Amino acid sequence: MAVMIPEKPCHFPEGSLEDIMFEALKKLPDEYMVFHSFRITKVKNGTVHESETDFVIFHREKGILCLEAKAGAVSYRDGEWRYGNGVPMHNGGPFNQASANKWKLMGLIGNSSLGWLVGRVKFLHGVWFPSLSSGELDSISMPPEADRIMVIGREALEDPLPYIETLFSLDVRAGVVTDLSENEVNRLIREILCPEFNVFPPAGFDTDLKHMVFHRMLDEQAGILNFLTEQKTAVINGAAGTGKTLIAVEKARRHASDGSRVLFLCYNSELRKYLVSRHESSFIDFMTLDGYVCSLCKTDIPDYEKAARKLRDYVAFGNFPYEHVIVDEGQDFGRDVIEKTEILQLLRDAVMETENSQSSFYVFYDRLQTVQSDRLPELIEKADCRLTLYRNCRNTENVSRASMSLLPDSGNKLFLHGIAGRIPRMHFCETQELQIKALDGIIDELKESGIDDIVILTLETEARSFMKNATVDGRYRGCRFTTCRKFKGLEADAVILVDFTDRTVLSDRLLFYVGASRARIRLEVVTDMDNDSCRNLMEKIVGKRDFRRPTRDLAAILNCMAVREH
Image (tube, rainbow, N blue to C red; front, side, top):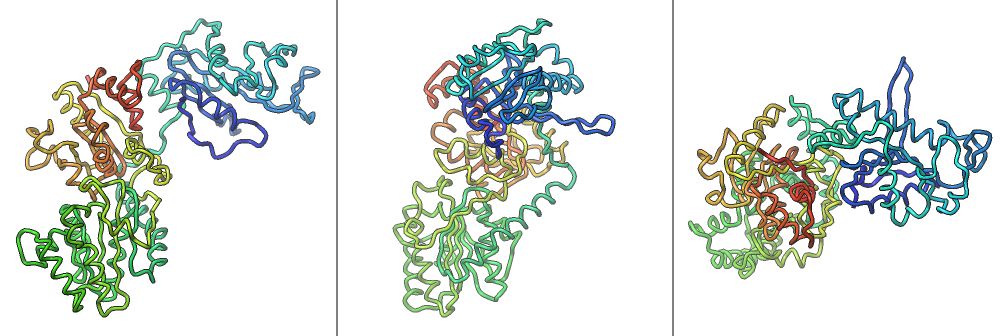
């Protein structure tokens, strides 16, 4: 399938059939990129000049095709193109318009830092009449500015490839043949055809973005807490980045402000430490479940059987010391010992038996993040009140897409938002030395762009990572180094994922999701996979082997841009 930009246009001109043509062009092979409604705006001598090409089609080995679409009734008489209602067409008709837009695009590239590419890319133009069949087009005497071979008809709606290939097969007078390196292709796309202008300012951006996102989340998501004011028990699902922990903390904070005692439970000890450091309150006890069980039983090792007996006493006799219990990372509480002793159910029953009529029990979880347990706790599965958070308040859209790329049908489009951000990169390094070199280069680049909040996460254990001998006290060049599991629930401006292997795709997809989704702004993936290993992996997941650029194709599956390290 061709790469469509934008992926889903928000508007098609009424009656233009561009929506049908758009869907048809999707059928082109994945080597093609199709830009819909490509606009060029220039100001010359104080006057704004605008042009729009219905479809710009790019192929790295064939060139660039500017394709003008004209649906419905058209006519040509007295040297003038007219619409079906008799109104003259602007810009001299579709062929002159397509040709003019082609030259404007050539000028745009020629006047840029990539000007030399004009002489190395074949530029063509054509017109698509989706309302007319080939037979009807053959019966028309084309005007001087047109040639029948440059015209596509209705049949292309079923399969546009042969017609597009015919246009690309035409020679241009200068004899130009498209011959671009991979780096030139990437620059042409990113600097001209699809520039990434959503560049994050280096100074103070982190603070500004976090404040903006936090306040937006509170403004939008606080409504959920208000809605649930009268709801004493609830389970709330949300993918990584939807603000579950922030909402959970906000709920705890609201109760604490009333002088109520709150027990806030999570699974990850690192997350607990972070919460204590940021939200310490005399009315909120932040604990891991194991830590709470040890505290309840006054033991060094969690005794869930003993804890269950104590909680049953609270249920029977009251006097539970908390008015509210909030559970974060609820998906990780499905361990056998927790389920067997019914700790979560007993905690719910104990808090609901307190004298406070406003007592509550809330669980926040991500059903996609079950890396610590094979199943969701029964309490979540059987809950009466369930809600789902859909708005991503942490990650850029491209990071979110990458993190969810390996998940099966997760409804991931629901979790995306409007901050595009940079496309993550996947660095292919065939040796350990090249991996370290790539890592150093990434860190230097991030710091030069003003990003200092960088974490390196391994998809393995620390002991099995290629980084094991390169770190000192869990850090490398000032950046924290740890596992994806240990960093679950936390976040950083930039995440560098290392030790990516075929196993990551075949059996550790959830772990990749956990690690990648920790990144707010930048995500980089480092792997030692070569062409053969990528090809073998692609064969297993796609079912074919004829990949000319297996590293690029694998990166594309992960919504990443491939970078070959040498």
